[in-house]
Amino acid sequence: MMDSIESAARQIRKDVLRMHQTGSNAGGAMSSADILAVLYFDTMNLESPDDPKRDRFVMSKGHCVSSLYSVLAQKGFIERDRLAEYCVDGKLLMGHPTRGGVPGIEASSGSLGHGLPMAVGMAWAAQKDKLGWRTFVLMGDGECQEGSVWEGAAVAARLALDNLIVIVDANNLQGYGRCEDILPINTLAAKFRSFGWSTMEVDGHDCAQISGALKAVPFEVSKPSAIIAKTVKGKGVREMEDSLGWHYFSVPKEKLQDFCDELE
Amino acid sequence: MRTAMLKQLSTCMRADESLHLIVADTGFHVFDDLQKEFSSRYMNIGISEACMIGVAAGLALNDKRVICYGIVPFVTMRCFEQIRNDLCSQNLPVTVIGVGEGLTYGAAGSSHHSLTDIAVMNALPGMTVVCPGDPVEVQHAVEAVLNLDGPSYLRIGKSGEPLVHRDGLQGFELGRGIRLRQGRDVAVISTGNMLPTAEEICEKLLAAGRDPELISMHTVKPIDRELLIDVAGRCRSIVTIEEHSVIGGLGAAVSRVVTDEGLAVKVQRFGIPDEFVQEAGSQMFLREKYGLTAEQIVERI
Image (cartoon, rainbow over all chains, first blue to last red; front, side, top):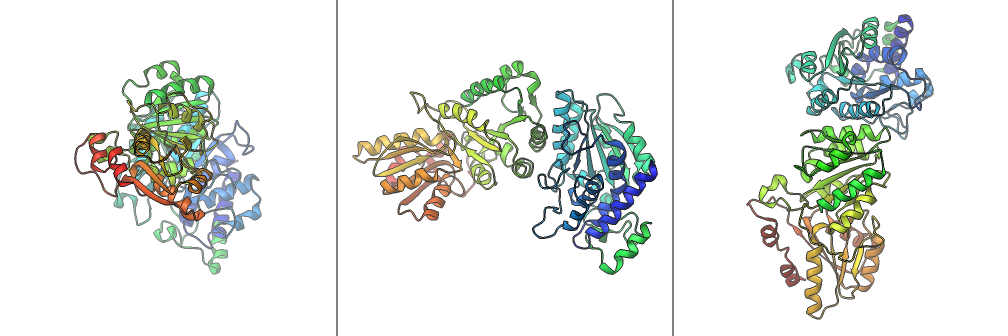
């Protein structure tokens, strides 16, 4: 099972490299690859993007949507050929998730700090109607500097939304450097706990660990769960790993094959 | 206006089990009855307007209809980006109700004034912007916005706004201004709580031998283009009156139609100048300071 998940993660990274021959944010998309592979090929109950009983996923770190497009192609929700439409004039695969044109995009995002409050609304809707589906949200650690994240965290705890799971892709790099240097918000797990959440910390590139954590949610009854996944920006390609520049760079054509080979 | 809103809201919540009301810790005791009757569909989400709009979007993405309620600046400008991205760009049926339009909270200071909200809400694609002129219009407007497929902003006063539609109102329709008097001289068009003043202006003009037209333009977006074209065909000038900045509100919307359609009519805009109020003052004191009483406006028409 883990083999197929790891293979899906490898495919995400290859697709991301191809898509990012133009545009920025390849590094962040690759740090979230293993988390997305586990979610979509192990954790979530999601056979069809139209199934009312499906688990919901909100890509709150919307700038890394290329990794989600790869997953949607691997799930068969969009045709694989469409990945070539990423950020192409007149096409629908925009640089941030935009609901409507792409099956499987549950909510539009892109401005950081919007995903969690929307996910709270979704999870609350399921709780109210006693529906079994769950809502998963992927956020960045830099994103957690946004105040609306903590408004959402407080409301989720107040509503006892144990059907809501946040995963923080904690690669410790944001626009201008290390998160801890730019605006330290200290340990995220402790912060979520102090807001009334239950938490777990995992290696965000160990699919078995991520899977184990996601199988254990809710960690406590009547509490939302937060998984802090320690990751490396650009994971999988040495030149890209933990490098701030890959928040911005595009993959040069002449390096694409070498980068893809390195993933094998 | 708030009482009329509450009454209609109860009726609507009774009729539609998907309808939810979220408030941002505003309205002391105002929602006591609603809270009792609809306990599972009412929530005081705390002082977190940005989160309130996001949560409303999440509910609306799952077939709930949601009203978000708070004091105008805090439910429009504090969470503007959530309204833009979460509600408007996804075209979700969420109604933002702002209480305390214009200078309602005059003495509270400019943080609580609502003089730029119409401008920013007007700028959002897909947003319907409604400023009812009296409690009767509020009642109709609440029902109407809750039938829209997309987002809406309903801007209301608080309490004590006089009735203008004393005999009730038939055929209220969003995007259709209400003609209270047909004339052939000057068309007095108001939005929101300036309707009673507009009515008083018309009475004074009549007494002076003029033949004014009176229109309540409760929907600022979409503006009633057809009505304005009709007015321009009969009246020599249009006067717009709003308790809002002269930038981006009713006057701007009317001027846009006049320009777009090449209408041969003079437009005179009455509103608040482009500045922050720098002194304490009741609503009436500040209206007078900015030349918004019926007497002051009649003198300048």
